[in-house]
Length: 124
Image (cartoon, rainbow, N blue to C red; front, side, top):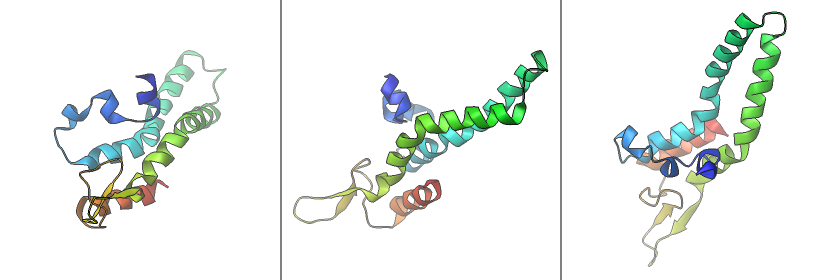
């Protein structure tokens, strides 16, 4: 389960019921934004630390170092997730292509697939 967290595998974390939808786009966007969304929490934590230890805390340095560490830990997972919409497999009988990570999404650059491709390009 620890690898499920580090690899940003939301299916492993069983959070699908929280999203209440079978649409794969919200889960994909969540995976892509998980590390950037941690920055406000880092800021809050550093400001709380500064409140209790004012002389020891350089806010900008600690925020940048902590955010850098988090992005370092999740870098490969974010890149693998971002490339997901571009990795497709052919259906038997040449009836089309589907995303390898989300077989229900057809790789035809329309609908859900184009949304995921746009988010992938933004996150890369």
